[in-house]
Image (cartoon, rainbow, N blue to C red; front, side, top):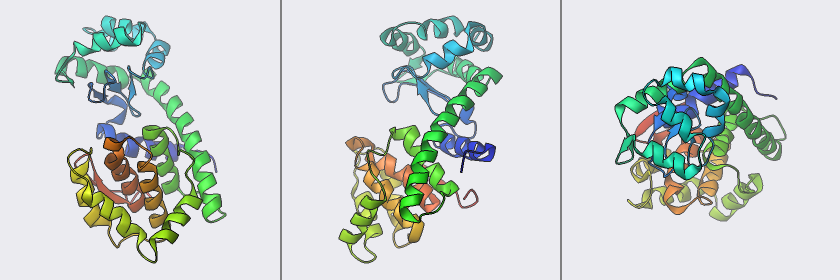
Length: 267
């Protein structure tokens, strides 16, 4: 089907919203996940060296203009080794939370015209990968074209998790068959309800278990099961958070990072 400009707007606003609130381009967070700082719509970061190439492409003058106090250190962090970069941005934080002054300048830089342009280029590349997953899923499930909801679902997978780990519609069909008639969503919700404080997003998971139970059918149920199967391929602590996000997209409504989202108007 191809990626349209409207697709990009929805992908950016929705998936970015899970991470950065209402201004996804300007997102800037501290070392909550061991990556130093994470910035922008798709949380490009120092630790995985996904932020540095974009900053270098933007150029030193762009950085210095937007970050008068911290720009030189930022430029150095993005042209040094990963460990050196992490050490530099660590000085801007207390308990892994960015101080207000560097956060304000990082937000200004990421929201600048040049960084918005570079983010859009990278978002489109991720969207094209998601499009391939969505098309493959739709062909296997119905033989038709993908929906926008399916595109958003797989975009969040690529953004947050990298790949599908070889999961597809055949796995969903097998899970539903093993679960028995009208039991697949109950098994998923039972798992969510059992999560404890060792799992990220466990409070949201408990709310989602109650919210989604008995509500899934058809395409929604298939995506919810796929969300569950993909979550089980993630690291143990992250599984609840992965399912909260993907399940919310699948069900059009759900709790993510302490916020209840209603996505019915987008799909």
